[in-house]
Structure formats: structure tokens, C-alpha cells
Image (cartoon, rainbow, N blue to C red; front, side, top):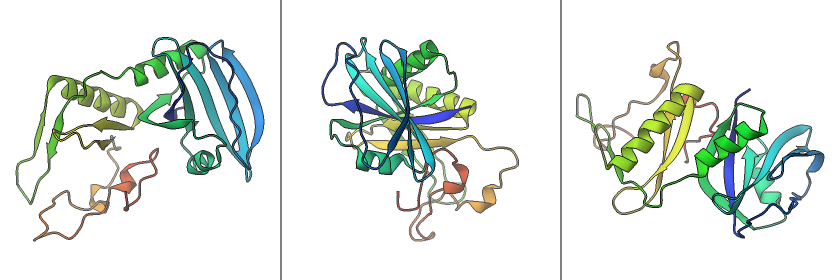
Length: 214
């Protein structure tokens, strides 16, 4: 089963795994497993719902990561976590394999970000038949290609990019089924003199809980 996890980075660096604990208020710990010397898995329960969490200590990155399953409890889990030690790494990963070595490999690939962020500009269509443009350096375009490959594999992918002014933005990519009706989405044009404010294409995404306020 494919599951999406958001990755959070600890503010404290760990060179070895010392089994740190996580205690969200109001959540009951159902199960705790040590899958590897550097990987722990937790199952928590709240209001008859379950959420899966991993802790992983990377000797390569020298970082401690917390992975939280994307579900209805995700935001509540972070709000009720009894530590402010973790912050959003702006990275997510799809986990398919239950083999610990495969899980670690997937996490390492997700967090192995380049030191220099690539620059990417996306210019959408202003109106019908207008041209659209994607402009980026090699680093950004290779990351875009990788994100598209993951969307083709898993159906969706979010990736963080930077334009020239370094004001970061998330790019969401959805690979829809042929039966998906594009007519249920707002037109992709953005000329404010012709079109009203567009709504986000939330219908095209299943894993990411998008809203029209995002």
C-alpha cells in the first residue's frame, strides 16, 4: 500500500540514534517497533483513527527526521506534539515497501537535497491560446523531471522550488486517470480582467489535502 509521509527535521543534530520519544497530547501509543538501529515506527490512535509515524536518524545527513503519515490526524498530531524540536523540512516521500532497508533508502533519496537550490520560473497562460513557459537551470529542471516521474509512479507529487528572488513555492503535480473529467476544474488562465480568481484544482489530488485557501 502506498502511503504519503511528510518529513520534519529535528532542530538538534543526532549522529547516532538514541531512541528519542514523541508524546503528542491526547494520542494513545498503540505500537512501537524498532525496525533498524536507526529507524523506529510508531502507531498512535485518537478518536478511533490511526496515524503512523517514523523516526529516522541519518548518519549521512547527520540529522534526525520524523515522518508523519498524511491523514486526517496529521495537523492535529503536530499541534499536540509535546516538543517544538521539529520543523517542516518541506519534503515528503511515498513509502511502498515495508522492508526497513527500502524505507531508509527512500528517506535518504527524499532528503538528499542539493546545497544550491535550482531556480525555476513557471509562466502560465493568461488567456486562451496564450503561450506558457517553463524556465529553469539544469538543477531545477532535473528536479522537475524527477517530480514528474514520481507523479507518474504514485499519481501525485509535491516539490519545493525557488524563483530568482528565492521566495519558495510548492509545485503540485497530479497524474490523473484518463476517465478524470478536466471540465470539473477551473480554466488554467489567469488574466484578472477576463477571468475571476481561480480555485485550486483540489479534485485532482487525493494524497494532498489542498483547499482553495492554500
